[in-house]
Length: 329
Length: 260
Image 1: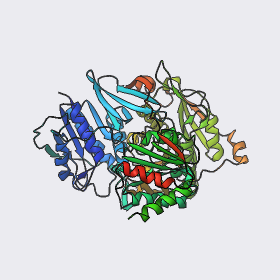
Image 2 (image 1 turned 90 degrees about the vertical axis):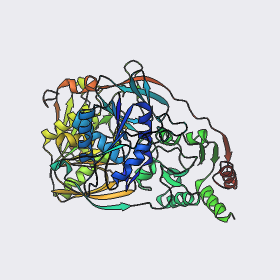
Image 3 (image 1 turned 135 degrees about the vertical axis):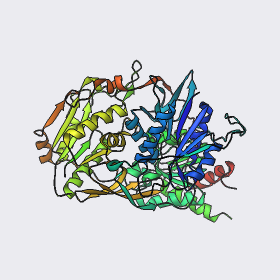
Image 4 (image 1 turned 30 degrees about the vertical axis):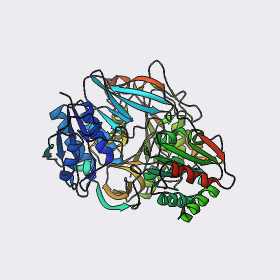
């Protein structure tokens, strides 16, 4: 019987959508799914993971001011040892990558990063990756009998509760077995302490969950114009995003970056202002249901793939659009 | 305080890489420049060493060849010397194989702090800094957007999903920085001239006591099984703004159900 081990992030008892997707996806691929979760509220998170197909949930509890990765990876390494899973799924997030990295080094497991799909082919798992900005599709797998770690991008699996219509998991799932993990202290490897936590963006939906994403790029011309992107996002009930170019330039926070090195988003509507659409960026948003792009360059790649491409100056179009939305009854 | 910094020499951006149809390895052409992402790591390493009151910045690199022109750029910026593991058996290394070599180099360099870019511009795995830290038994403060040091500890602003957290970390430690967090200095003429005479120690896998079966294609327990063109999205309507494009945007947003 095959087992998959899922790294599940949660905050105050609420599992992230990304981690629920991994759990749901894992349960469609293997007979048994185990999830490891940590932090304040991890016991409450177990029920949601069970609904998405986890048979067993290992909870680590509140880690206080520690960075999570060393402790979580050590518990995962124990689970790998005890349960010999076929593979480990980790979310492609800040914590997920660090945990996968530490587990890889600790348990000598190979890592395949940035998977956008995982399917069963024969008796093995095959992952799909977009490379060169989505121009090419690569399929990969672990060689040899040993397990490996897949780091999986958000929105790679549909989110379907076990037993729900369309879900591939079996119905009538019993509540998951919940086990508290004994995590040993790790000395110097976990010597870092979190002194304070700062939230930069409180209002509106997260970039992962937003139905509408409003993104800005180099064509904005300066950091001061990014506020217009944020304002339009607010007016449309969406989330602001940014190209790598303007994150590198310091106009927008890294947390807002969409693209190969940032987030992958699949909103209903993606509005891009002054983004030419380098392949680096396209790979992070090309699966949006609808795309609107505004750019001075008619040949910009993003104009070419948009449902509505507007050749024009963002400094004109963006303020007029904001004014028109505000003027609506 | 001595600082080591991981750097990678990559093809010039105008010489795009491709996947070999035969081996499925990433073919990088003639490696020639310092990875742009790593230039931020070098800059942070130099600043932290200066802030701590001086100390040496050592470059750690690995490649299946002996091309050193990219390393000279970082030496010209102010790094003192470089350790380069050059062995053709490194070709095809995965992230864990890369981390094993860099951890062995870090031990050899004996630095108080190891700095790395979050991810290279061509590989995107993003795991190597934390893998190296785990192999060294050290803490890793990853995704730093700002870092300071007093010579015995780091104070770091670490990016998170919701913003950032301030992390205090005693040395020795590994620090990974995201691109764009500082302005990277240009090498001065004096720096460029002196870089030519700075030592680049070329090492073999045997020199750093790494089992060749753990690195390169031999150690990478993963394989690419197919490469094919991805389905490309088709465009729709393109219009030129003549002063009223916002009405069209509102029209489509209404049609798509965003506005009522």
